Amino acid sequence: MNLVEEIKSRLDIVDFINRYINLKKSGNNYIGLCPFHSEKTPSFTVNKEKQFFHCFGCGESGDVITFYMKIENLDFKEAIKNLALQLGLEINSEDESTKKENLLFDVNKFACEFFQKKLKNSDFAQNYLEKRQIKQETQEVFQLGYNPNDNSLVDFLLKKYSIKLLNESGIVSNAYNIFAGRLMFPISDEYGKIVGFAGRALHDNQKAKYINTKETAIFLKQRLLYGFDKAKTYTKDYLIVCEGYFDCIRLYQEGLQCTSATMGTNLSDYHIRLIKRYTDKIYFNFDSDEAGINAMLKNTKVLGQLDAYVVEFSLNDTQKEDPDSFVMKYSIQEYKKLLQSAKDYFSFLEEKILKQHNLQNARLSQSQPISVASAINAIKNAIDNISDSVLKSLYYSKARRLLNLNIVQKNYKSQETAKKTYTKSHYIISYLLKDPFLLDWIEDKEEFAKNFDVVLKEIFFKLTQNKDVSFEQFVSTLDKQSASMCYELYLLTQEESISQKRANFLMLMNTLELEKLKKQMHYYLKRIAEDPDNEELKESYRQTKNKLQRLKNE
Image (cartoon, rainbow, N blue to C red; front, side, top):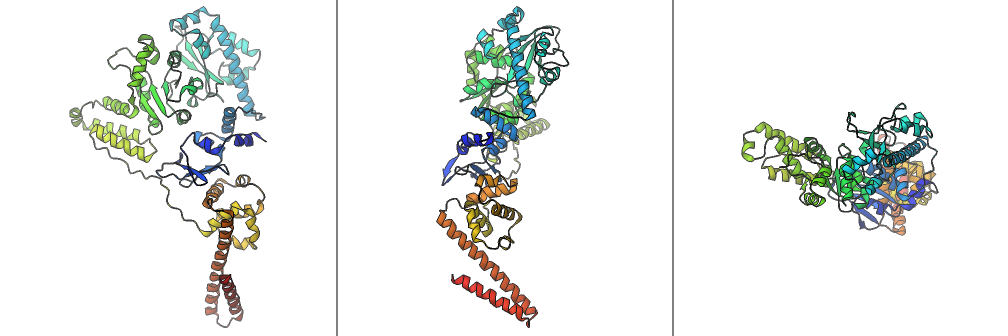
């Protein structure tokens, strides 16, 4: 059994998809609201027997791996690797890129051990952490380290790795120690594997306060949340998302382990999907300076995807705070009070937009139409990020009510599934997919499929060549459009018994034959009208008529 088959055998598609959406039993299948398009009525169907999903609304379909690729925006290779890691399966691959990634992981792990050892031997770095009240056990949990202000790191790594690989890792640049003299924060992926580093300046002559590993094959900032590998275990109720490394470390040390940091980037679609795998509730806690507030304003894509709240520090406090400084100054208990009084994200958004446009009260807003219009557009743009049409309408209503302004909602049409009409040909293919040996009842297959559309014709003839293989194997031979149609048609006759399917198949065969004979009769009658003395046409007409009569009598 290869790795892909092993993953499929270990993951039940119903249980797996239930992590992302709520599925309910419906006959032999499970249904729910499609995660790939906006709808009010469930059209997303999961078949436990054959382990596939199909949406009758948008047409998305596939197996458990296809679903994971789509929902997480991953390519096949990434999906297989992630699922294998989740299941604890060993990845034996000769793929060159995988080998390179494993080497980069190895370099980072080796470098991390070097940094940790140097931290223990550096009074200077240890004194810095003591001043920041970072306990020894916390340092070990986050694998904090120190990179000496010399080239000893490069010399150490060159004993084991080539300079080419070290350059690709982003730790060094042309044998130069770019992180020299910095406190080192290993950055791990969701599974705890070190993918890169951040370095915090400890000397006055260092211009940049923080620097990161450059983007590499394994370090992609838009896919990483600092500390998430530790936080995910504690995120059942909610996740706190802050900006900085010390913010995350401080809250973790004080007992709020459900904390991660964006490392100065906006939340990406990937971040949101990652978070949603563990919780639907998020608390933003960015710095209280203008940059931190603007960062929260830019994360409008969370609207409609997460139950989002914003933790705000005292507006009367002239000292700009972040979670780390606030807890050190006041206590973790005071911070927890801020969590309890956090505003929902939309209310925060609305308040800050109005403040930016100097529209805190209704009287003032009436005299500033330009500012009002600008604020309305900003709020509309935020709400328009919501894909769910129902939630979009609710937020528009809330905006109108709270602002006492006439914000006009764009006319977004919900992608509700229209009732689809299936032809006899669709039902024929549906029965054949369930019981390919019914193909033996069709004598002239070319003639039989003559009036099928292109997709049905491809499915039909490929089925004639592969009737001995499983449904899953057969679908894997088709292109995306034909595969989607196969999943859809398989579900079409799902509730019928085997005897019902065969009886209905025979009835359809007879109906199609009757229709064909009627068309032939009309054709002959038309030709005879044009050539009344043609005895050959008359004989063909009589034979067709007799066939039709016999078929009706059967």
